[in-house]
Amino acid sequence: MPIPVYLIEHPKGRALFDTGLHPDCQGDPAGRLGERMARLFRIGFAPGEEISARLEAMDRGPRKIDIVINSRLHFDHVRGNALIPNATMLVQRREWDARMDPDLAHQHGFNPRDFDRPQQTVFSTVNTMCSATARSSACRHTAIRRATSRCVCDSMAGTS
Image (cartoon, rainbow, N blue to C red):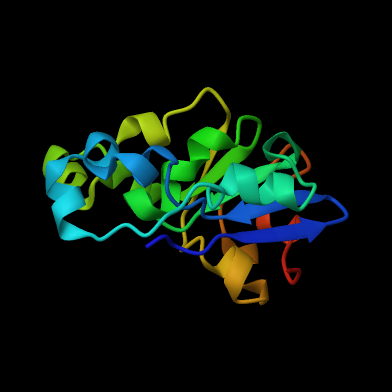
């Protein structure tokens, strides 16, 4: 831990692929993750490594991110979402629906305070990992549309 985060810059906007851990995990993992999850994982996460600080260090503040692409809603991929205030969140529909199942939510450490935000959430019918990592046109087959009727991924596919 933590999980890598990728910044995708494109003339049409900036996206993050996953957001890593929340800074509360630096000093009190059990307080942020719960006792069970803190026992299962060893957190190696120092001040200045949270996504907001990393973006600021690159002169790309958290408010300058347009889209957060979450590969999954597990705590180590999504807890930094709270630090990106203006971005639209892109997530798999199956993943979003699974967080509503209390057993799955407990098993995977889903915590609504990490991803239930006032910003827009857009759902994919395919694995969202294609949009940022594969550098292929696979994301063009998603069911995600904006007002322009273009896939959210299309505007940033093939860039890193």
